[in-house]
Image (tube, rainbow, N blue to C red; front, side, top):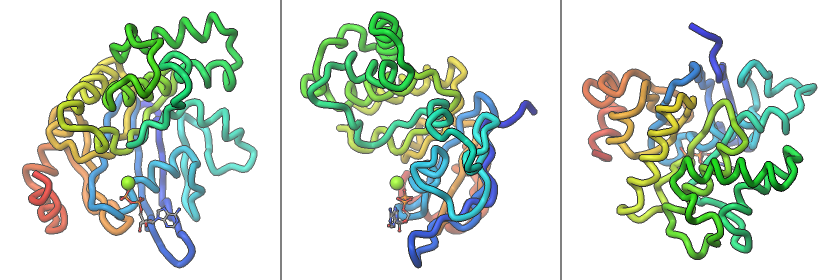
Length: 244
Ligand code: ADP
Ligand code: MG
């Protein structure tokens, strides 16, 4: 196996007295798509947020693309550029166009000149099939289009891995398919991805591996066929029977 893109070992997270992650291991190989499922409050978002240091783990080790995220000497902003993140709420700037949102970090973080940032931004919008919406403001776009702009904003930085935290949960049902289609194309282009989502159809079709989390622990993991078809643990069975 090539070096994993993500190697998280024994990750713990406490919020005061609340022990939210209780020794989670997550190893993701290059080009792998790993799905994380589990009940609300099980620690899925906290785990993703630890993977790009939006939260600081209380214990454990996290290495992303060879960079030790918990080493004090690590330039965390440089490391974060390798990790794209897409949230449930798209967090676009309402007063900036789609292209403006996508190019902002290219200009401010990478320091690219305007012309180069715009060329890269347009290419990213093309990949999410929104080239013709570059000059629209978020308020003029559907939720699904806004989420695709958020994906374009992340991929424009050319990350090594993309983290998705319930990317379709805030969308009307008819808009979900377009976002999942873009995610599937990214996967086909070889992007390494960790996806927290309840879209089980997508998980079955696109995931290499599924982790079921409960109470801050990975209860079991396996292929989609194993987890959905023959879960070994009662908690997994109960959860899957509730969402399908
Ligand atoms: P999930 O994404 O699986 O629904 P979360 O990771 O969001 O779970 O939350 C796990 C637990 O951690 C929940 O009990 C939540 O209330 C708690 N939690 C999350 N973030 C914070 C925070 N910043 N401060 C205190 N508690 C938090
Ligand atoms: Mg969550």
